[in-house]
Image (cartoon, rainbow, N blue to C red):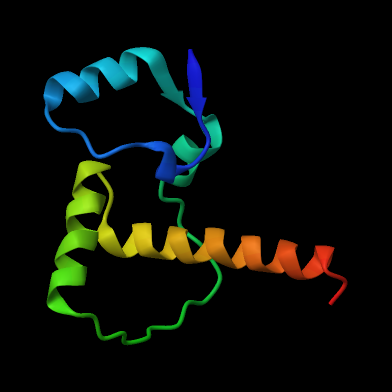
Length: 95
């Protein structure tokens, strides 16, 4: 059984049969599953406004639906993952 460590490792499926075959051979890493569970945060959050091209937003929503996620939560997760990667990269470059 292969472990999926990143959402980007999950391909776009042509049909349910292809998706079924993929999940018979693969499983999500527990960290990814845990990241999907909403846990109330006692810290403050700030509301911001972002403007997206309607087609891009539609594609984001489609991806989120395919993963059974709220699109805004998925986008926050993407941003958090990318921020961590950027910070790690800067740390390894000695900045």
